[in-house]
Length: 487
Image 1 (cartoon, rainbow, N blue to C red):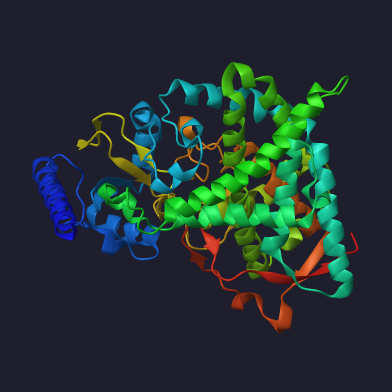
Image 2 (cartoon, rainbow, N blue to C red):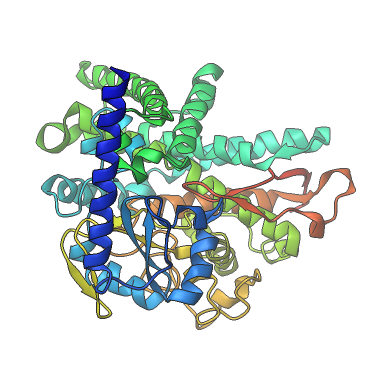
């Protein structure tokens, strides 16, 4: 029996290897240039633990449109604003697909997810229209800004208590809890801080675990014939975490449905009410849970650029620009020019996701004289573009002033040298909410407090490094001591 299994696996392996070599020989002349890889594994060893930097360096040799082989996957890497425009705008219809990481298939009903559906699918178009016309509209976000302001006040109160006690605060944990509350109120009109603490801790653990598993290199993605074996148990563990998260969200949805069915119960007017209003026509109960899961899993994304913003401000001591601006509502905060410049500069220098969520070619398409084959996955290296001296003066320095004055660039991805949320049809649908949450949280903490580093640490001693994942995170967590201001 063991000999039979060995023979079967060996035969399959040889077949796939021969097929891979044949594909390389027949397609090599048409594909964009790229580094020579090893048999079977391709260029995997060249990526290292910081693939965004490795691919940036390779692009300096092979060009801004480059082919790399990640196991049996042909991958196209775009590393310039001009190529990004070709992919995300000029040929957007051809690149509306998504390659599906194997870990994602551990989520129940993952095929309903707006994040992973092909952009040519009718279901994706329906969900996208629902997000843009009903959920993340300016009117809807404005209507719920009072709840977010209340949650920010709760955060300020907690920091004030720490200030009086002279306690240092882990900025990442503080912001994650605040973002969780801001999102929960926008989605469900509920304050998670008022719920049992084990619920909050369980939610945090599940979200972080799913993000960790999604970022972990998975052999099944590079060698598809290994999928039935799930050798690293990534899909298995992802399923456990996804099931736990969906169970928590399902309880929230069921409670709301019971409330709506109660005689005379008024609607809350939040996102969940919108989803339930459209559930029969578009989503269904399962679709609501999957869409809420997508939003909850983006909790971590606003936290990471906030950490980089905060580190940058302490490191470069630019906080005095805020002190005379005062505090107001979200609209006032969003109109503070230097605050917005700081956010933009942070998301340029410390891109949230070094690679935009990968695209997949839905057909053979010509880009800059090369053929990108159908089913090829395409990485847009936003990290490389945002640090390219062709587009940015002193690209590795934190200079918020570059976004002031005549250089008016927004977050909507119309300038392809600055695409922190992507661009085109597959731009992040929750971009507006993320910018509001970041702006409100940052302005509140800077307006009400000055900050110093613990143990006599100097700003120049701060670690500014990242660790790679689905989103870039600070390698060493930031801890600071709040000092109440007299404003």
